[in-house]
Length: 72
Image 1 (cartoon, rainbow, N blue to C red):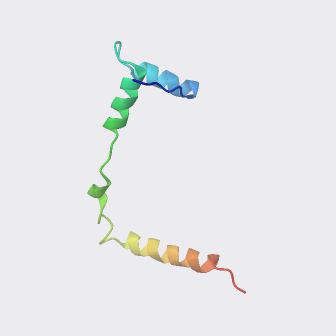
Image 2: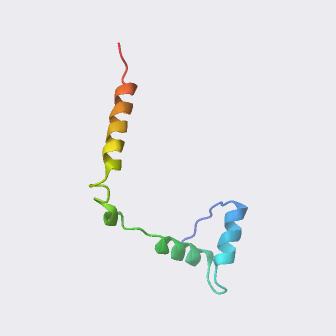
């Protein structure tokens, strides 16, 4: 197994260290935390389909695109 050296801020090191189990390596704690936070984005598809917010976002997006065009 190969290893890589990474740099992290001291405050994050302290958080990882306090989260780490007694027999757990830093690699194990990072892997555990990453797997716990995994989110399936497909669960959110269509959430705004019946929402006024989606229409407002679309209108704002169109305004921003129109305002950003270079007029010659």
